[in-house]
Length: 69
Image 1: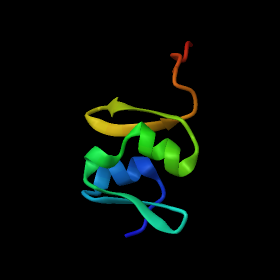
Image 2: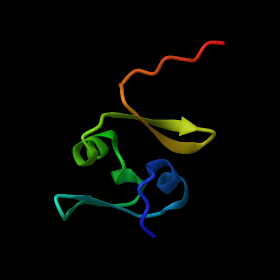
Image 3: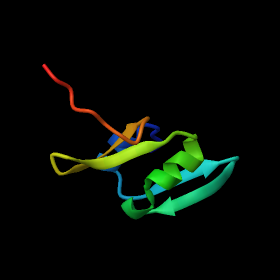
Image 4: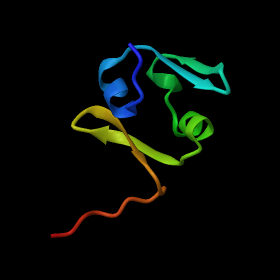
């Protein structure tokens, strides 16, 4: 399956392939999905973490601020 939603891919996939410039940039298991690889391929800094035991990717700044009511 081809999927561009990294959060869905992290939740359901076992293997990953990142392409850059028409070539395979990185491939492997969850261990290759790192902020460095994502920034190099997509040109976007991300924060990675866990939410409810599931790995997740948040694009943008390296600092998240809590939402206040």
